[in-house]
Image (cartoon, rainbow, N blue to C red):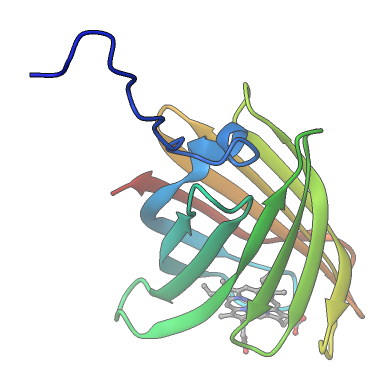
Length: 166
Ligand code: HEM
């Protein structure tokens, strides 16, 4: 039995304070999406997203993988780091399996559980000029829209998906 008055050892926080407003993203999500663009045939895909972090670091690690909905064959994959700041802004770096590299900047709303990002840099891309990403968690489901602009086509949706926490 603990001696009366003994100090409880300090517990480390479960989430780094800078990451805490984005806790609604943390965990593993799985679902389905639809891809489209004026220059391609639309397609359906399965997707898994993992947002993980360590309480000692002010950063979220991000990995994504996708597969063809019909056959399960792997499609696009990407990974990176989400770096929130206490003022509600964040920067995200992403490397894609196609070789494309992104630096995204934007903001989050902890109450609405939304994140909006716009590319500041799109590197090593032959066609892509700009990428925007918008995420929302509502009723326990994560949805997002990814838009892109290319050398031939103005900014419009390429990907929309809905995922559940697993
Ligand atoms: C086509 C970029 C994510 C599947 C394309 C094209 C570009 C592109 C530039 C060609 C468009 C054109 O020729 O006008 C991107 C970027 C992504 C992304 C920047 C992420 C930000 C994904 C993901 C998937 C995917 C996650 C799969 C789940 C496809 C497919 C095509 C395509 C199937 C059509 C290919 C073809 O018809 O040859 N994408 N993509 N893309 N993308 Fe993405």
